[in-house]
Length: 198
Image 1 (cartoon, rainbow, N blue to C red):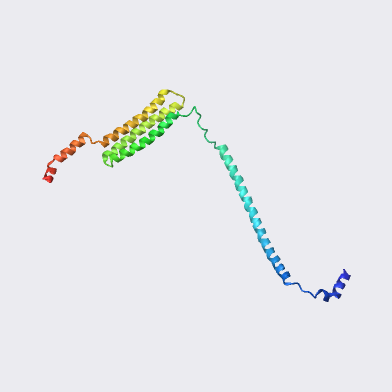
Image 2: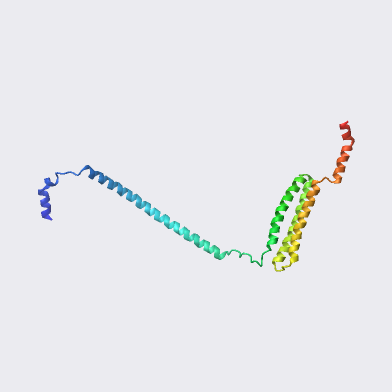
């Protein structure tokens, strides 16, 4: 090693005659900048790894909680064909529910907001509740195993009775009764009106 040092010292002017070019300095600065970018990328990579780990833990915990929820809270089993109402009853319920709502809306328009109208609406709602309770009792009896055709017919009959009741009330509200016509006629013949007219 001593010989190498001596050789370099003796020939120093030969080694110092050239200076590095400007490209060398630019490359050196780029390397310094690259090192800064590498540090930033490493920081980002570390943060990214932690975020990926946290996301994986959350996903695994979510699946775990989902499995536990399924195991400890089983969903009710769908009804067998044995424990279901006939399709005829289901379709009829949907049809009459729509019809009932339409007829109730018509009755509400015809009855108005007078005391008599409110009384009519309350009475109708009470009758509807009674018929619905009766139908529900019949359906539950059917589902309990008494698969009798008479139960199905009774359920159908309840819906027909409800429909006829609503029709009758709507018709009565739509047509003026004799009593209301007589009252109107009496009012027209009263002296009060005659004096105003004459």
